[in-house]
Amino acid sequence: MLMGNSDNAVTMATYMKHHFSFVGVKTPERKAQSKALLKASLTVPLPEVLSQIDGLWQREEREYQYVAIDMALINLRRWSLESLEQLVPYVNDKAWWDSVDAWRKLFQEYVKRHPEDRETVFEWFYGQDDFWLRRVGINLQLTAKADTDTAMLTKAILADQATDEFFIQKAIGWALRDYAKTDPEWVRQFIAGHPLSSLATREGGKYL
Image (tube, rainbow, N blue to C red):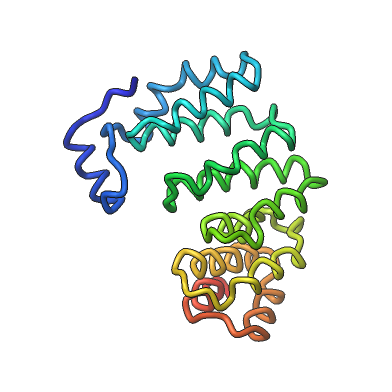
């Protein structure tokens, strides 16, 4: 059980627009309190890890979802493509930007380690009805630098270029801004050649 502070809980719930309740434990302390649990997860069979992740996820307070994602991340080297896919349904369950972007990091880091599976992982998110899933697809290649598959990035962005959803347009801008650190000319030409939203254009062009 996580031990928190009631004043912190109120502040954290307010910051997250009261979508969730909180124990009131901030990130450094949460990591300290869950360190032993996470370390122990490295020594148990993956089906048990998946069960522990689900148990944490089902708890009411938001910090337990963070610990669930931390557990998935610490076991990154152990996931197969098949076991990783079992974690996809959590992305748009209890979804808000904090958990969605944290899950995205798991899939992003897996793809970096297994580039041969990038297309398969991308297809788990591309074209889905739920915009939170599509957000992961758009931002799947963040920090990939020169290894970025620009055809895949283009496909993800163009499918949602006219979507009237803040978190999608923000994701498009984020993806372009990140890749601009590697190939600013490609991003410049992409923005010039496609009718993107003002938000995506502004965010994507910050480093140009």
